[in-house]
Image 1 (cartoon, protein in one colour):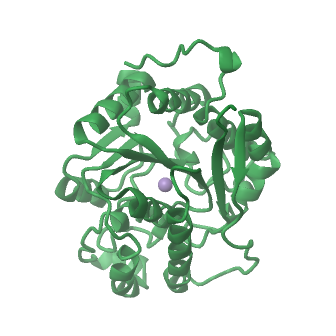
Image 2 (cartoon, rainbow, N blue to C red; image 1 turned 90 degrees about the vertical axis):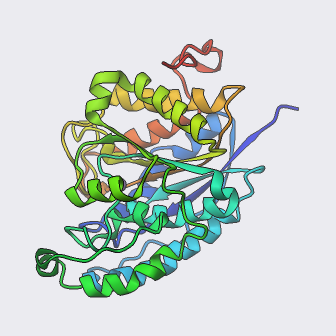
Image 3 (tube, rainbow, N blue to C red; image 1 turned 120 degrees about the vertical axis):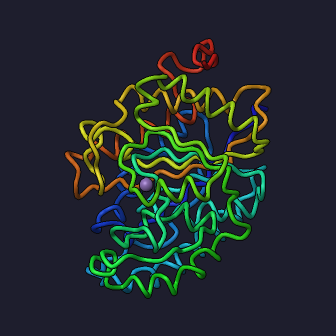
Length: 339
Ligand SMILES: [Mn+2]
């Protein structure tokens, strides 16, 4: 009997930690354009459900948000940790990117030290209370996962983020969601183009061995060259599992306008798909020493969108990531040679 692959889709309709609400509708929007039927057509069995119902309460005052978010991260962590990697692959659909604290923390419980993360995003998401310009937790998940020290906040931050002291107080609790912490050399970024000065400092000072690939790297090396670099880095680091965190804002806003913090100069539709297809090929290669731990797809915000285009492009990306190809299953592996 043919082995059926199983995916466990965890929708997280949660968006308290971006600039404005709306990405709580992302999981629904992606289901409505056929995420599940598309995966079924690729012969995946679908499990899972949303982590919580869609909350209709707005607005929620900024100082309250981190406290309201903590139980969501903990619940998501426990949910992902409860998925046996031998049985199913977790797909976490957001929601804002702060929820990766929960999803990756869940994967860390399963894969421990061997877990690496590929952060496909226009942003580095490595701010701490000492560097954040906005106070929004969706710009800090990697810093909490890696247990970065909070740093001290500037006078300007105190003006811009009046609840910054509360955030400093909550930092240890937020970091404690991830136990063990993500190893600091085990993060690669792809598609960076809007990075805060403080994040660069955090990366240089604390993230020795991590691999930041920017849009300029994509321009110079192409998607294929960048992914070959990621693959080399993963093999050299001895990683045994890879969590892929896909923020739809890595795509150019021409193709993915429905997101909270769009930045021009991103991946084209074709480049985005090539990333997905090549990751599929890398992870499926017979000698690949690391296995797929799971996938986040975040920051689809239908309220900023045009005709649900962004949920559609994100869904198509997921299908490519899970093996959809132009010529179907008989496509003779043309994307398998990388670099
Ligand atoms: Mn992000």
